[in-house]
Image (cartoon, rainbow, N blue to C red; front, top):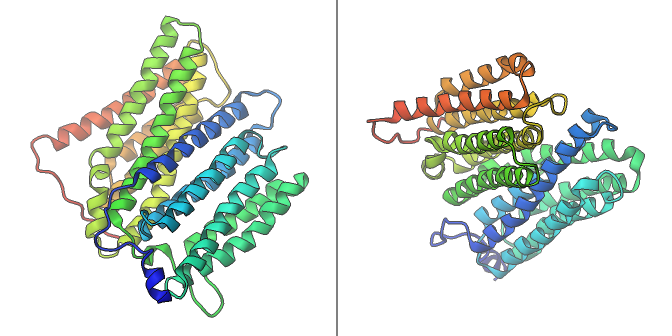
Length: 398
């Protein structure tokens, strides 16, 4: 009877592979969370009285914590039946705690540290604890038990770091590294081995759709940056050009992502010999893709605010480095889906990096224009290669 109750929580053959409305509702929190990460990063690079490298490293840590929360929730709803009340409770509770984390992000390394840590620990410990109890005697309970032990160990440096400001950066870095190592190794326990996510039985189409949706969330955050920044500035021809180039960059990132690997990710996972392996690999790739989009969005605000002159030092890291990071991850994504190296994307990375010395001699809007030209060249090349050819089927080597 206990096994049957636990089995009722698992996805069955009749489950819809589409994301539920509750999951889309959950994503709204991360639209807000990404705006907080982006704004914090902008503050890091524009404030003259801050240690830019230290502040930026802290923001990266907060982003990685938020990504881990979202990613593990996506895996839960791909592994368990999201229409069950117990799983819906897990999603809604995670949503609330994620909101707490998001509002703490701007001052997470100051007076809101405990708020951020409590939100994170509540999700990372509470979710596997609840699932362990809900699964009862089902064999899959062994996975949630592993995750629970690793999360409980991680909770100590998270909470202690929140209470000790001097030790906070070191303790939180240790805690986050522990969480990511656990994920990568499958949360091994002595005498019990590991249970890597790559071996999980998941609904591949659902997982693919969730990654695509988070990519669109990141693009949506850049649209918010463009609109809010430009609407708050005095209108000028240079500002209008920066606004237009920023929008074109976002549109090109969307095109390059979905042409063609992004369109067939769901099919690739569905037909893969081991969907979990491809799903796990795609998770890491999408982390880098989203990071590239966020960096690019920061560049938009820096350029739109100062289109004709010099903006914050190191602005090419965002204006050109963001798209370069996106293209590098997108090249990896091409390999995951089709088993080939995307030369155009790698050439784009080289061009964006190589054009940095040129961009430094130009106004910031000139650097943004160079990025648009490189991305447009890749998009046009993709369109030319696809013209008149049948749609390519996925052939993942993973």
